[in-house]
Image 1 (cartoon, helix red, strand yellow):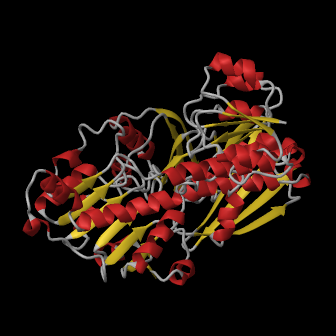
Image 2: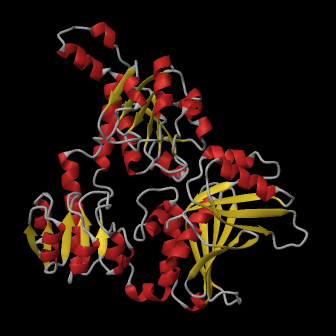
Image 3: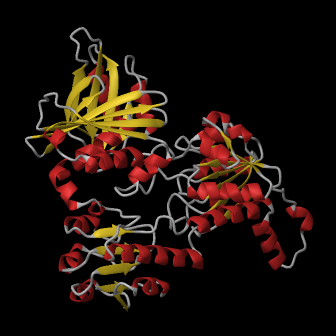
Length: 530
């Protein structure tokens, strides 16, 4: 077997793979050059410079795995690789320590006024009195997001003598307290406890602008903020205003809403203590080495007949299990996504029931698809390989059943999601064997195609409701693609829902305007994978 490594990846990768395959290190090539070469290789390892296109994948006669030495895989045509049965892997954890250390470094730099003090000294001044800082010792650090990076930040902070409080709706109280931190159940009780706050969450519709003028007002005066996660989690204009007013004592920011074009970033106009760095969280020699080693070990495992730990596509599931149910994978994933996004609370259990033809098949791939959909709605980096592991770590019970009760579809998959606050049921099916539809949402029978942008609008069944909702949607420049309006399965029911497919993302202002309509309650915007 032969492995091609390109894009100046650390030579340690080759040494790991050499016991099982011949390794060639070649410079970055053009698409046509790689098309000529790739046919003789069983594995390909790249960084971001090489674009692994469908044309290259089509020319790969023996390729079993493509490894990306890093996190992002946007330079690889994953769909083309999946269709050809090629595993695509990355290294989602290789920069954990680097990002955690960057967080601590920025927090210390901000607390001790390092950046302005350096500038002053280089200009030949001795301004000791201007740069009196604050100690971290005995201060309270609030951590939002207690994954691998957040938990390591907590360990280091506690070693520095800080008290740590954690908000993470997807981490258990037991795990947080075992680590020595205080678990806070809701954000309203979190903000006022913290002298420093750092965020370690993905950028989602729930975390976008999580820190804004309203939440800043709930914090202690003199709080200091750190963001080494994703730009957009902190509203940059609101943070600038809070710093300029003196309410926020300082900020240390490594990520921005419009990277790399930060010329108009509001934080550049801050008059107070800010430390701004150009997304250096993963920029260490060690992190670059770690991602190379991680991906090389996965390539070695796959070529040796094992499995990859961080596959980002479906071929890691055995083809004999996947083939009979492959047509249902997308509707299963969409059902999991929808169930999570229309309910509230922490997931306790997911019950998956197969009916019709599916009752006679091994539905394990569908279980994984449901889990991926449910978890990826709130977490980054979830894939078909790690979804079961993440669910287990978070204490989510997975219940899989088969029902012989007759249904109106060739195959029907029902997802019952139970949280600490609610129970939601979503069912998906294929019509005419290849047309996916959401056919049930709780007590409502629907026939709606799953689309990227959807609105679920529960409402009182009375005249003009559809018109009022449609008017708000239209006034906000959003086009309605289709709509399904249904009552509960009870002829005396007074409640209905609208399930609306729209062309674009729905902002909170629009949702609030819909909810303000008399008779509408708790509308939800749902974003599904294509």
